[in-house]
Image (cartoon, rainbow, N blue to C red; front, side):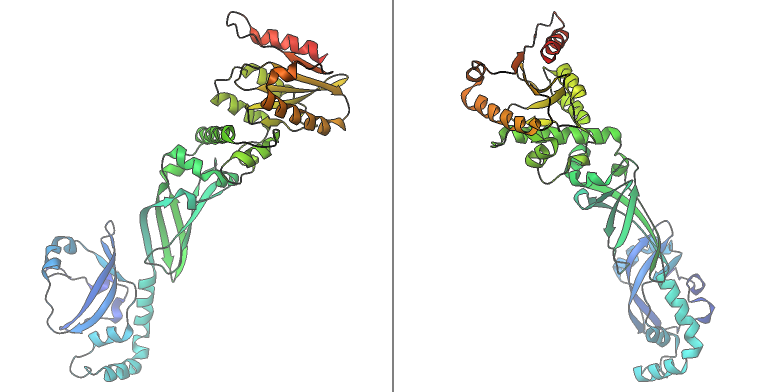
Length: 397
């Protein structure tokens, strides 16, 4: 290996069948991987040679490091090349003679071939690298990815476990990039390979380990913020959206709402967190009273607001409440019949169009049966919410 260092053949898996090489034989090798902790090179043989060998200047500069090596393993070893360096130079210098001798010695060197094969195929890959978040596959309890290495012919699949991760988060990986403040995660992997087969693999990543309930909540909030921002700029003929329709229409790309939220109450809680809403308590109260089994919560993008359905003793009540604007609460009461719900939603959609086009004063000035308004008191010196709630109860009864 150097003028001062030779790797004893006993340290290699050629074992005792190979006792020595010819004195003028040498191999030129290319180092594929340096395993510092094991003090081992993983190499491939470029050529099998005879004659005087001289160490070039670049190798001489590495003498200190090379002298620290304990072993060398090989990607593959050509049997004829091996035999040619074990046999005598003069008698077997012709390649045809070498091949003939190799055939004659097949049985003698069969165990050598097998040992070489084992030595070159049993090895370990240890690597750290960066992997794009967009190419990770989010599953229930882990993320997975595939990576290819020079030492192995196929891509190797890795898993990084994390109980907080769910499969539906795969649809919002770009928001994880935003919250983690990186487009790539650093992963460290370890792979054991025996006889061309991966027998074990392990991977870990500090960024993936950071994903917990708190970070996922931040992902949800950023997603909702982005969707609201998109909806405020959009012009839509339809004014009323179910929760699913709203996020499918205004989020960037296809996404099922269940990827982030199990019910509308959880969503409203997050909406209230990200907004300096004037109607925080009012919306929480209406959400708790909403008859979700009869009607899905409806969203309006301009102004950002909600339509709830509250079931009274004798009538159904449709309630329009905004998130931030200083609007009164609009209440439409109708007969208590499941059949009228869808028709009345269509009517409310048209009313909202009118309010947008002509202004609220024109609509309010009309006399319409079943329509009432409940006003908010924004005076900080009084309990405006309690006052509003009592007025609403009077309307609903």
